Length: 182
Image (cartoon, rainbow, N blue to C red; front, side, top):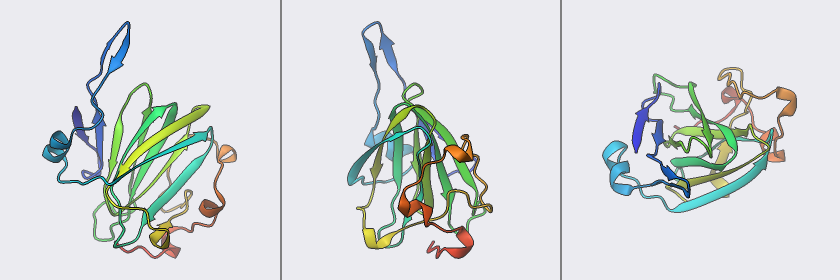
């Protein structure tokens, strides 16, 4: 496994070593010891999965304290652009983002630390995303920012007319109009 720092050093791309032959492939998708050596202590408590069709954009979500979450995200079918936005007000990268293509072909994962908003957009016909979180979901602490916030200015790599949002995500506001607790 390779752990690659991004322009926001706390957001890490994890590339597995894939062993393949004419029968298929094998790779280690998570190793607690290697994770802790490269990123730090973590206790993942829940695994989540979602399936979405092309143009679906989920996010940008975060949970307020004391239910903040770190996430380890991977795409097991299809292709997505996965995004982490730094919401830590005292960070030199506040309002900056990392966008990474995750796919069933490249098998990359993205580690999104606490204090970040997370979202993804589906670039393929369908995609299945799996992600681990280090804290339980709490509806009362659920929050987010608008996917098209002009202060963040994310390139989602899809046409704006293709974007499909949930009712909840349509109501999200820009950072300047959202209580950011980090």
